Length: 253
View (cartoon, one colour):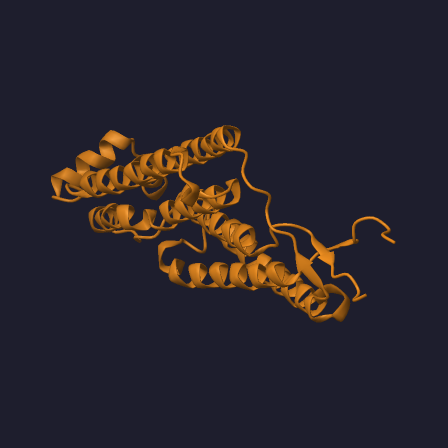
């Protein structure tokens, strides 16, 4: 005699792994990018906000890890994802990839504006952008900054286009919307976090031309870095969290 479908349980092990992994990403990124941030100026609030999330993630990771070890949660089986519905699934997947692609192109545009406009104005207040570039050219600084930014923007724009095209292809290997979202968030994270490679030359040129530091003075730089780290953390949660609810294993007859 059956009494309906078995009750659903949530397997917390994947959530626990994602929490610990996200905490590691935030800590490692904070240490790695410390030299690129002006900790006493605009980025102090962003840095504290990011570090404040670490103990929260660790606490959630510990609590969900304990839940995953409990017998009643582990006594279950994972329901597989239902098969995709052909053309409709492909259209949905393509729309999601296009939205994430547009978001990454916006990140690229914001990164270029930060490196070439916002940060120079914040680093040398009182001068216009034309005056800043004019003084830099006079001492032979900043001549290669535009090339670094163009290379960074071109590479990640090309990667974004390839990502959208790949997700739109009618291939089973592309997988579900979850995989598309994970790949898109990782793409955004890499674009944001590696923006410092495009801005390094400009930062050093500003420091040499005006006798200032090479760290970011505009808050847009730390915000881009934080957005990238949150995107990577979101990808980890999507990749590690349970794909479906878990049904309690039926008792043996």
